[in-house]
Image (cartoon, rainbow, N blue to C red; front, side):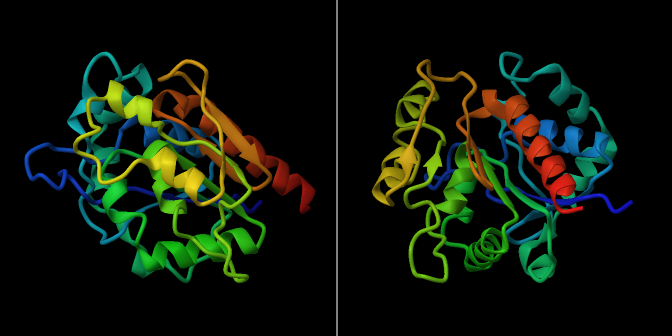
Amino acid sequence: MLYPNILIVVTGTGIFANGKLSTGLWLSEITHIYHSAEEQKYKITIANPKGGSTPVDPESLKPFVLDKLSEEYWKNSEFKNLLKQAKSLNDISDQQFDCIYLAGGHGAMYDFPDNIILQEMIKKQYESNRIVSAICHGVCGLLNVKLSDGEYLIRNKKITGFSWFEESIARRKKEVPFDLEALLKGRGADYEKALVPMTSKVVVDDKLITGQNPFSSKEMSKAVIQHLNDNIITNK
C-alpha cells in the first residue's frame, strides 16, 4: 500500500525585525500534525525556506500553552534533530506531495509571504487538486500565491488565520510586520474567526484547510488527516 506523503513547512526565522524578541515555529503547530501523520504511517518531510535549524518560539514552550503531546515531543531528541535538519524548499521543490501543511509561529511572517519557491509549490499543489493547509501565522504563506489565471489563491475562499485581536492578546501588535487578518480580507478572502479569541477554529474550503491559532492544532490535524484519507478512498 502506498501511504500519502505530507510536507510540513516551518519557519527558519528566529527573531523579530527589532532584533530583540525571539520567535520561530510555534511547537504545537507541528507536533499535532506530525503525530497524527506518523500514526497513519504517512511519509513526512519537514522543510523550511533555507533548510537547516528550525528555531522554536520560547513562548510556545511555556506551561500554559505547552500541551502534553507537545511536551513529549520536545523531550524527544530524535524529533528535535528533525527540526535541526530541515530540508530546504529549493531541494524538494520538484517533489509531489499529497498535502502541504504550513505551520505557524511569528517567524513565518518574515520568510513565508514573499518566498517565490513556496508560492510556486502551493500554486502547483492547489491546481493539481491536492490539499493545501495552513495554521495560524502559517497562513501568511498563502497571502501572495497567485494561480495561473492571475488571481490570488485565497480570493473568494473561506479562510481563517491569527486575528488582529489575538495579536493584542499575544502582545505582539507593535512587533509584527503586518496585520494578517486585514491582508487576508484585502486579498478578497472570506475571513472567518472564532467568536472567542484563542479558541479552536478550523475552516475547510474544498482542498484548502486553515486553522486560526495554536489552540486549533488538534482539530486542524484531524481535519487534514480526514481529508487526506477521504481523498485516498475517492481516488482508488
